[in-house]
Image: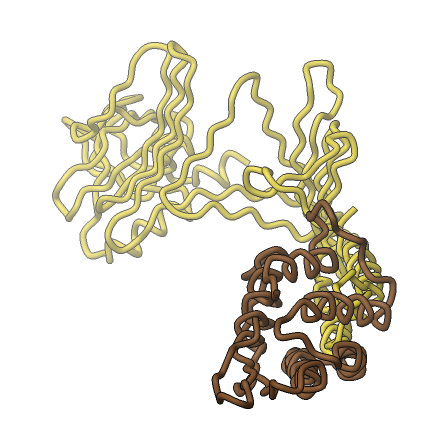
Amino acid sequence: MDNNILGVGGLEASNLNAGVGFVIIPNGVDIKTYKEDVYRSGRISIYGGYGHSNFYNILIDSEALQKVKFPERVGDMGTPVVWINIPKHNEPIVVASLKYDEDFYSVSEFRNRITRGNDGIMTDFDMDGKNGKIRLNVTGNQNKSGEYEINVSGPNSNSTYKLNVDGKVLEKSSDEIIRLSEKRIINVATKKDGITAVKLEINSEDEKRLDYQDDFGNSIESYEDKLNIRANNSSKIDFGDGSEKAVLGNTLLNLLTKYDQAFEKMTVNTAFGPSSTRINNAEFLSIRSEFETILSKLVNLD
Amino acid sequence: MLDKDFLTSEIRKINDPFYELFGGWPASCSFACLRWTEAFYLYSKEMLPPSDTFLEAKAAFLTIIQGICSSNTLIRSATIFANAIMKMGEVIAPGIEVANPKLKGIMPPTVLNLIPLFTRALNGELSSEQFAIELAEITDVWFRSGTAIIIETGVIINWN
């Protein structure tokens, strides 16, 4: 197994076991293709350091490979690396990378940081064990916007993403915040004893699209054929400042009809005896026939 | 003598519930007509020079004013009322000569128009009392424009 990985013949390492070299771009290669090959194969070319030649296509530790920076062109030097030579196989292996001069991020005791970037694009994972913070920074440039994506999946579509916070959760966006579910989104607020005080649910499969319920007995439910608002324990629903009471349409219609029917029979005393009933009764009856138009076709109360 | 205030009081007994002598609302239109007739009769029969046809004039007034009970417009009602008063004057006039052959009675010459008064009353511009006062005033002015001629001398005296 070792032989398959390390090769049989080995490379000249000047009989030294280790050294510090630099990442290089070999001559005659397409730089872009070369870099892709390095990450695909896990083999890299380095200048072996003082007293050494270049080592081409040698193995590199996967962790170190994540941290190296390539020079811009052939002849320049990139990230300094530590290599060791395994005597039996006589082939150097890069086992660590050292701090690159152009790295400007601060690293300190209790802190672990991984930064990768190019042409103004940067991804940075910063674990600060001294201050109890983890930051994940993603920055895009003029041509590519930053993106942070988490994918959780499984064969049975029952994967779970959990976020547990003993404190606040703050989401802030300079643009939209979009939450998309192919089934249901549930927001719940409980009291300290764990009993639900209010629940807001939106879903695409149940008969209710929107379902708001709270421990005051209030609810808002959206169905295909109606929107239902209830105030069971609250005893009233206010629109605006709630200074005027709403009118019950059917009750008003009945009262108006009774009122006009009584008015229709009304007479008054005059100096020429009791008056007749209203002379323009036909006009009143015409108006009475329109009473039902006061009933809303959209809103029902109580 | 003709007494405008007396007529005002008689009218208020019929139409003004706030009048201390108000006799109550008439129970029917026909009974109301009897009361109106009585009021104008009591007023007119005190006229000088006297006439021998006051009772006939009363009956004539009643006959005409009863037309109000089948009237359904203000203009028609006001016209009927004015016609009843004018008919009363028309019947009183010849009775003056009957009562006193030296005199010849001439009814008031103008046509009585009560439409503006009735319109203002129905529009709520007049109280019952104001209506009674104005109706009595209009009637009294009209009656006093009636005349009697002393046949021998041609002297004209007004009804009063």
